[in-house]
Length: 163
Image (cartoon, rainbow, N blue to C red; front, side, top):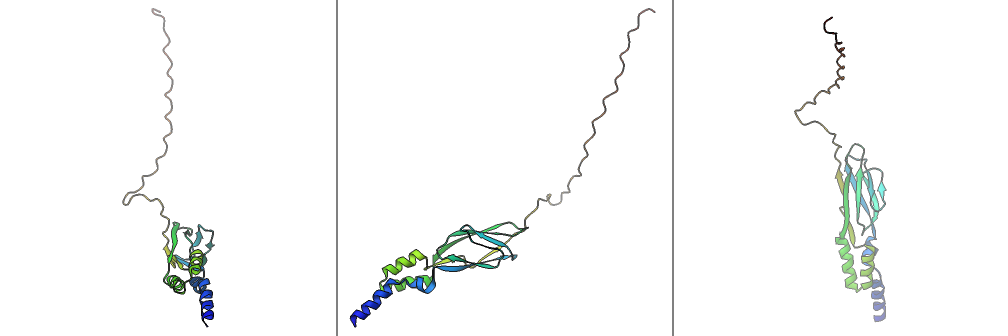
């Protein structure tokens, strides 16, 4: 009986609790106002229109750029942290004595959650250059045509004195 219990504990210690219960990837969700924006991440993932979800490794770190014509691009920095459910998986490894399980969970990122998740971004319209408030633009001045050169006056011809 003792051998059976030891064998069961040994098998459990070889498995990674968080990896088994949560998996090493998650859906990272992003939405925007207005919707329909494109999302591209620095780790090569994208979606054509918000709202959308992208499957990511739980231990990912990346910057997502959200773009839509007529709006300023926005960036979202996404990182990871130990999650409540991930911590429970780590605790399960500790209780069962699974040093190997701790290593697997740490390596796979199963004990992590992406933050922020879900992510939301409010896109700002592109601002166009406008004159200061209350000022009216000066009318465009026409380029003045060059003044005509003065007409040449003939030099007085010398007249012989005493004629």
